[in-house]
Image (cartoon, rainbow, N blue to C red; front, top):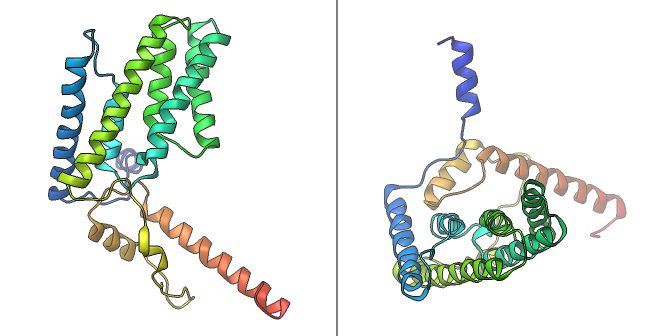
Length: 241
C-alpha cells in the first residue's frame, strides 16, 4: 500500500485516548451482564408478548456501565432523553405521514430537545427512531411500544444504580462531591500541562474518558487565556470585578 494512503487511513482512525485496564473492563462487563440480565429476567416473565427487550436499551447499557461518570449516563440524561424521545416521536407521527421524513424529523427533534434541556443521551435517538418507525399512527400499537420501551429504561436504570453502587462499588449517579472544594494549582505561564501529563492522569483514573487529550489541552489553554483576560481587566479597573 502506498505510504501516503496508509498514513491517511491511520490519521482517519486515530484515537487520542488510552484504553482502560483489563480489571476495569471486566468490571464494566460484569456490570452490564448483571444489569441487563436483571432487566431481561424481569421483563421476560412480565411482558405478555415475545418482544421484551428493545435495542436502544443495549446502547444505554454501554453508557451506564462502561461510562457511568459521563453526563450522558446521568439520571437526568437517561430519564429525560427517553421522555423527549417519546414526545418527539408522537409529534412526528401526528404531523408527518410520510415515513422517511417522519423518522428523520423525530430523531432531529429529539436531538434539539435534548440539547435544549441539557439531557443528551444517544440511546434516546434510537428510541425516537424505533417509536416513529414502529407505528404510523398514535394508536394502541404505539402506546404499547412506548410502554415497553419506558419499562425497559426504568428497569435498566434501577439495575444500573443497584449493580454499580452495591456490587461494583463505584459511584452512580456520579457527583464531583468535595473535589470541587479542593484547592488547585494556580495556572501560570511557567507551569503548563502537556499531552503526556494528561495521558498519565487519565491512565491513573482507570476509567473510560469520552474526550480526547488534545481537546482537554485546548480547553486548558482557553481557560488560561480567559484567566489572563480577566486579570488584565481587573488590573485596568484597579481591583477585582
